[in-house]
Image (cartoon, rainbow, N blue to C red; front, side, top):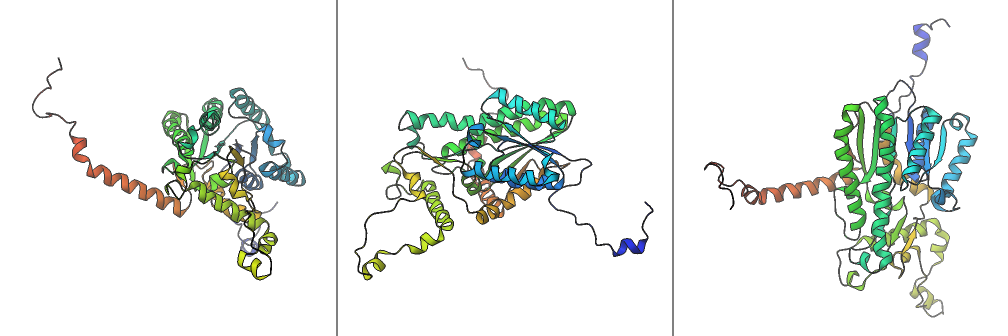
Amino acid sequence: MPPQSSSASSTRPPRPRSPHFPPHNAPRVWFITNGTSPIAIALSKQVLDHGDYVVAGVLPTEFEKREGPAEDFRTFLDEVKKTERWRERLRVVGLDGRIVSQCQAAIAEAVEAFGRIDVLLGGTTEVVIGTVEELGQDSRTISLVEDTFETNFFANVNIIKAVLPVMRNRKNGHIIMMTGITGHLGTPGLGLYCSSQWAIEGYCDSLAYEIAPFNVKMSIVQANMEINVLTNRMTAVPPMLEYSQAENPAPLARDIFSGLLDKLERANNPSAAAEEKSPAESTSAGSPASSVHEPTTGDLLSSDTVTSLYAPLPPVFKSSLIAETVHALTAIGGHDNPPARHIVGFEGVTAVKDKLKTTSEELEDFIEVSNAVDIARDTGPATPLA
């Protein structure tokens, strides 16, 4: 084809350059561990549309359900079938990250399908709402501690260990671990969730140094707490009276997320919310005010049994909630020089900076105590203890 004249090329509109994707020489292969999450689905659409390949890990027991994230993922699969340029570049694999053999099999299937894995996005997480003492009430709540670490820590560790030989042999790869600002900040009422986030971040921070000589990069992406809580399964343990707001205002997590769930429920069903009448309106209409409280989704977080649920996210709210995180992931994924840590959103950055500032001030306050270990530094060798 003959080259076009400069006049012809000058009249052609400039090719749009997306800020989401750094330039690269070939399509990337993404492995997403929690493929049914809203963030994973939105990210998959973007990278598939960009020309990349996606391997989506799906927990088989969750996929069989016809509700919540599983139903959203089925809708996504229907969209993939109708989009020819996506169809051959998506592979769905069964993956329970808590089982080492399933992690190894899923990675092997991805390599068999697409030849390599360029980006591993780990984000398997579950939120448990309850104070430390509430988690110790009985055998069921105590077992949640082990279950949470199996999901939030070991599931991510297992998939990382399964993919490392593939990336190391190719001398190329990028591991992205999605955590939250709870990896920096302790939050009353979310102690178990925070501790699991600190654990995986410590693991990944150490891993980053070990794999750097193999040209395998490590990034931690910290999303806002609301994103992790509202886009994944949340489990609440029965409350104790001693930690109710009337007795102890510290653990706000249960009340905050109960209120959020109720707002989301009303947003999903605005007609029902409009029909609700206040007691004064009911009395003025000639009917006595009812003292019966209609249970809401938020009430489930204060149930007298261990309760698990997904937030009823309206589509518009869901897309706006995750947009900034998806943008960050697409910008970081596969970048030649990705950040070791990225905090999503101005509010998260501010919260972490305040925390670090407080820590720095505390260190300054106790610097004399810290220096006390420098015993007799200039007075010769210390006398050994008898």
